[in-house]
Image (cartoon, rainbow, N blue to C red):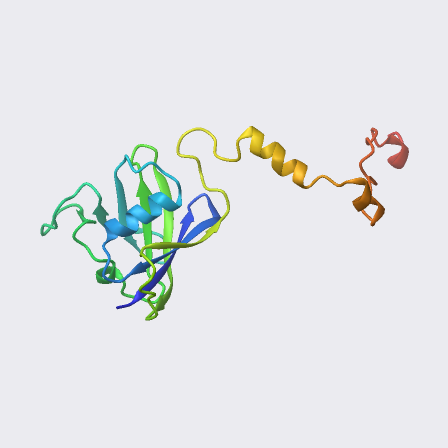
Length: 183
């Protein structure tokens, strides 16, 4: 059994992504649930995978709303489709859309295949999280109290300033007329 490592980029910022490992026997629905969890969405909305080419053009659709695969249907089922059935190239790409009304769009790319599955781990598995993802509702980030704690953790004390850290450059800057002259 193979293990796929897939990178799920947020469409609006390719520096914000999640790497997820999925067993080849698992379905698109299993992968869908892992994406929802990794991006901290609530899972209450429909979602779809689209086969894609290198230009992220959408192809065949696999929907969370479709329960069975039917010939010539507009969308196929995530529940019935194993991920391995869709991996055709070493850099396979998909477009993933969560909540058709809000159009949360993510670009998915196969970044690795391995035969080394760890039987002690439960797949799909989030293995890397880079950047703060979009907030499904409202604003995502640290709550006010936690933010103050984080800022205080990085405040320099007198001992650190004596070791070479200083307040230099922290004085209030003027209008800049002295440096460039009046024009």
